[in-house]
Amino acid sequence: MRLSLPFGFYNETFGLTAGWVLGRVGYPQPTARVLGTVMAGSEGSQLAFAMAQDLRIPGIDRLFIDPVLSLGHYGDADTYIDGNPDFAGQRAGTNDSDQDNFLSGNVSDVFSRVRFKYLLPIGHGRDQIIPDYKVLDGALYSGATGAASLDPFESGRSFFEIRPFQRALDIDGEDFDGDIRTNGVDVAYFWDNRDFPYNPSAGNGVRLQYSRDFGLFDSSDSWTVVQAEVDAYHDFGRSGWFRNRIFAFDLWTADTPSWDDDGDVIRHRAPSYTGATLGGLWRMRGYPAQRFNDRSAIYYSAEMRLTPHRNPFDNWPAVQDHLGVEWIQIVPFVEIGRVAGSYDLGELHSDMKWNAGAGLRAWVQGFVVRADTAFSDEGIRVQMMIGQPFQF
Image 1 (cartoon, rainbow, N blue to C red):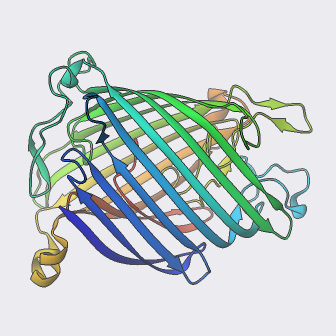
Image 2 (image 1 turned 120 degrees about the vertical axis):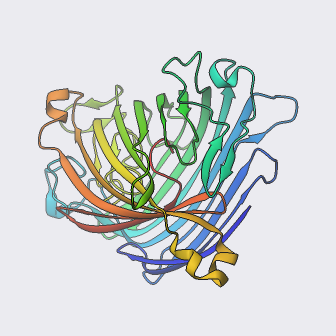
């Protein structure tokens, strides 16, 4: 299956934007999928993004590789880090920080990571290394690789993961001219007990992750972050209007044990674009990217993924012949979360931020294409991406 789709949208960072996304399922290997997109906006921002999933090295049957590369330039972008002279004495990105406490400037962002996933010989991965998903009209009808039980030794696919990463953020602004760089590695255990990872209707996922930047090469500082994420799914079945009604829930939390705050300077903290961060494509979609960042964070999200019986694209045969949209979803959702200067559950669950919204998603040539609109006390935002949220 091959995805080739033009798209357009508007947001504050890009302005009026046009782009193209290309994707292939079963390429360059039968187990793999690849995706790439380019976009450019009227505000002078451009982005090129490429990723692959489940590439394999011949002779190492249980090892899978997921590379990601992103190259971006953003004109007059907002970055929620300290340095705005109008907010002297207030740390940017905290839960109580002013929404205008950011730095503006031209931003160059280069990001890459490669995840090496080793499938453990337990659960559904004991006897079947390559899943055999059978999909009809965009829905799984056989070959589920999870949701059989809550025992990882009997159900789901368990992975031990190592993911080297690198990111360089260069900011050229009126109040700040410099760079923020990180190089490190994520080590994780991921129990994927979802029936169909690309569009789950049952089961759950659990990820436990340790991230470390050792301060080597050109890193701005050394730091350590620990994270945990749990997501779960339940299909309430058919109704008069919908062929399925899938409830999806996600809990994510993070802490920075290396954090060293002497009252004047914070050392060994993760950059604002990683670690205990909320806002943007994946968590707290009603806020700008990395709007909230601190030592610790907690986040909850609930979605109802409603798939109508009728597919409006069937009314446009010429479009449908090109796109191959097998279903659409209408997805109301709500999110709450908070960052804090310590991992205190009482503080993390007080004065929490929230947003709510609705998404329109479609299954196109084996990919979920989504456009989510969310509103918060800081405005309305549209987030567009490939793939369902949670456990990205």
